Amino acid sequence: MHHPNRLFMGGIIVKGVQAAIEGICGVLLLFVATDTIKHVVQAVTQLEMAHHPDDFIAAYIFRLSQGFSLGSQHFYAFYFIAHALVKLFLVFALLKNKRWAYPVAMGALGFFVAIQCVRLATDWSWPLLGLVMLDIIVIGLIFREYRTVRCERLEARQASGL
Image 1: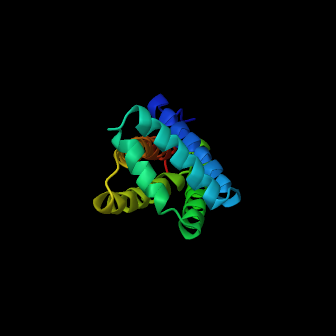
Image 2: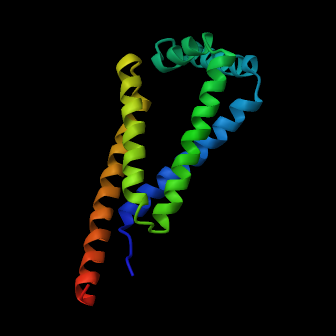
């Protein structure tokens, strides 16, 4: 019986928690009025900029909120929900040690990294860069674990004479 590496398990659990948070945010975006979101974001960022006029993150978020529309709200809601569902499905499959889930998870995370890199090229964001780096690390952990699982299964087949 295979016992997954602790670092792998930690990375997978972090991705699961991140996916759950994304899903909750996506659902909230579906039910909270666009004007309410804009008002709250603008109030919080203006308060922060009153205390710290040079806070570029607050200024950036404030500028983003100015152009926040119903269309972008729906896009982000469905993006977060879809992203969360895919990741949660793969997290559970990896935790159950489903062999097919390893390459599928690496491919899905690689696809998300590619999308995020395109976004970074057009609209730089340090938090998004952090998420990209986390995804790349998790892909590496999944790859390492997949290699271990494949080697153990190969050894078991050879030992049984197949």
